[in-house]
Figure 1 (cartoon, rainbow, N blue to C red):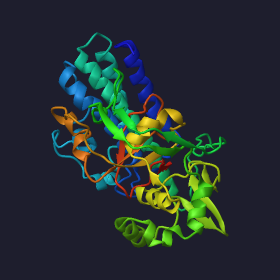
Figure 2 (cartoon, rainbow, N blue to C red):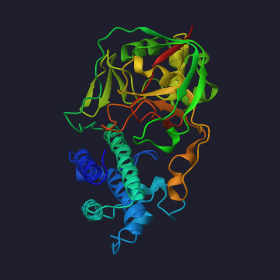
Figure 3 (cartoon, helix red, strand yellow):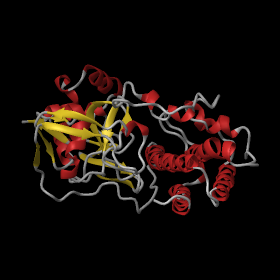
Figure 4 (cartoon, one colour):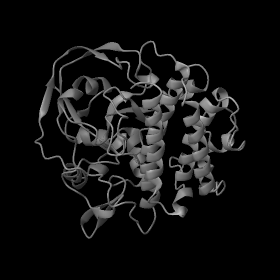
Length: 388
């Protein structure tokens, strides 16, 4: 990607796509926050805009007029360096600023960025702009999954869109792909964009193993349910078993058993579960238990990266058996951007691949997503591995 024109076009395309995602919403949908992990769509619209204002415009755009002095407090997410912010669980209480006001804010900042980058800038600013674009792309996926949670927990189970395809069917046969033992290089190696947690390319030794060419599908997961998988303590970690019982978990998120038939809420509304589609909205605990039931295991993130060129991926974020930890020689950036990834490297599992909700030009073989073990509102699934 050349700097200036192409990067600016990428920025404008990204800003437009965020608003396209929100276009099917009713005005009331913009402010709902059912749980702490889900942010209201209005907040996503504001936060992604604040990122550009805070990290680029305030410091680097001469004469820039801040849109609203209160918005840094309202739309800061977790940046301690920046200052105080609305508590995460209170984002749904923000009836003001209005949705219209947030869209006006977006227009104000987008135009200011466009004007700033209409002339050549220092390389530092292009790098900040690129990070901001991919930050917004992350929030585009969160927007879709948060919208799904909001509507999927509405008693009417309303449809968001008739055009979003969540459950692609895989028709190719399942095979076990052998991976030889040896030393493999892990981590981002090119000049293309990546996050800092992908850097520190290093060597790892892998024992021989096999990995499935396909993700586990819904039919296979129904067999796990019917075999009593959610009632067998021996398949679960102790913490996972506590989670199952305390939360009365008996199926993936959004699944409903109606007259003996499994349905699941989708962005198209309530539909019968598609047997051949990859299972999704499962926690790490569930992925681990299923693998135990099958006499298999989850791949480590290093095994996944070493093998990924041999299978298709990108439909589901795939739970791995790896803790989210820094690579060798990992260094956090100075200032607020140093809070982007590094401070979350504890009590989380790595997921690899991407999902049907991941925006185009925002995934790669080295991408390290990460979530806590009980979370499942993202499009999470699993791929089995086994020792040879």
